[in-house]
Length: 119
Image (cartoon, rainbow, N blue to C red; front, side, top):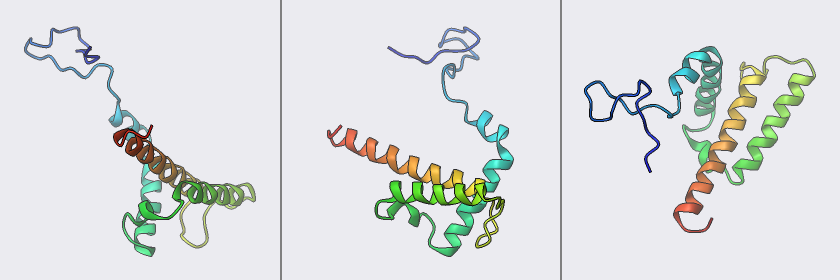
C-alpha cells in the first residue's frame, strides 16, 4: 500500500499532481528554527576546526559520551552560564548538538542492525 497522496486530492496521473501529502516537512523545521539551527551549525563548525570534520561519528561509545557532554552543558546552563568559555558557543546549542549526535549514532546503529538482520 502506498501512503503518498496529493494534498489537493488530485489523481496521481493528473497534471499538477504531486504526491507529497503525509511526508515530513523539513523546510518548515529549517525555516522555523533558522536561528537555532545556525547556532548548532556553529558548534559543528567549531568542532570540525578543533578536531576533524565528521570525526564525531567514530568516537568510541559516542552515544553515551555525547549524552554525558549534553549533561555537562546542561549543568553549566543551570549554574547560570549562557556561553561556553572554551568555544564561545551557547550551552543550549551545544546541548542540542550533543543530543543530535547521540540520536544520529543511535538511529544509524538501529538501521545497521535492521539491515544486517540483527534487530
